[in-house]
Image 1 (cartoon, rainbow, N blue to C red):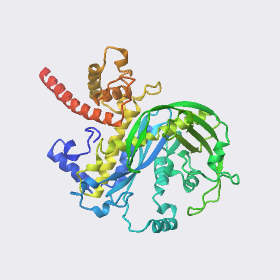
Image 2 (spheres, helix red, strand yellow):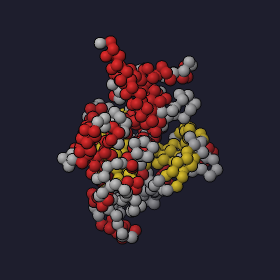
Image 3 (spheres, rainbow, N blue to C red):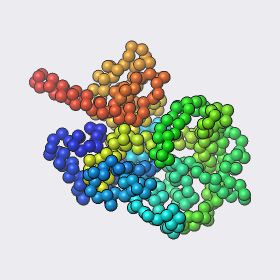
Image 4 (cartoon, rainbow, N blue to C red):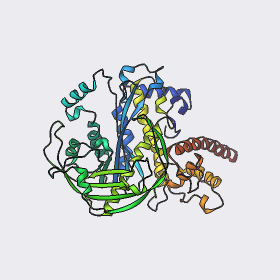
Length: 456
């Protein structure tokens, strides 16, 4: 799948025998989900050694609505959050180099199905209150942390970055003794240890620490979770930053209850009204962290790190409709589809590595050997000569020993024109570029073999 950039068994199999062998592999009960995940995350162990790393986690839903005609075990598949669309759920964790932003690998994967329920919202809420933390789906956050810590055991410092879905009291208590830091976006107005003072009021009491400008591109995309089109005008947003310590009261609504207060730091980044066009929603992040924030520079570092959380969304985009299209699988059994999805996420992460390597940064020195062998590198060098223009602006700015060199070439193959004034290439551009490169490389190999035979 990684080599051919395809998860369709009959397309990536070169012979009928290999195709049948691949199908048997997916259906083999001896190939367990846990063992396959272990194989996928194992290279990340060495990649994280002696580095400060960021571990980013989030969940997504995989719809199987278009596969109704051939999936044979619908009862095992489950439903999505709407309680009717057939599909399953994925919670993925991946590791990045905190210093350079390089993609290091996947650190954990959790796949599960949700049984359809006929209960009312009130009945579901009552049932949920009776369950312990480990019986709830939100336990995926802690489980992902524990498994990722095993994979990142050789890392120097580990920081987990989560969105609002992980901002609940019980998780903070469970992880506070772990050998790791956490950076989580706040989602609600917590009670603080100061009587009558809540988090947002506490934040507003702090003086402005500094401001910075953030370039926002025009946005128009369909938000499937909210089932609506999100729009945003392009603008230069002026962001005000506050930071400081905060002591939060534990929630009394979780089971088992916790009584210890939480000592954290907050970083609040909020767009000023002066730069906000009429009718637009302000950019506003309230981040909570176990890192000690002592300066404006520390606060800005937390913001830059949280910005990288978007990369897990890009990974999910790569494996879905416009990328590998896992939602149109040809497989017929749930367990086989789970295995295919795990391997698709691994192949998708290779695409993401190119996306992460695209930035022109002095720290961006990841070796090209991490993604391409010697023959592939020679092919990339030949293609680079074809795409480079006469001016410096249209030349590959990276040395051919770096993965960023390959990233530039693959982006050109995917349709990016190479101008710095143009929007940077996105994940689907890299996926298309890799697809095209694999086709070109097959011809390259055939030609090289023909020449060798002729010379012999």
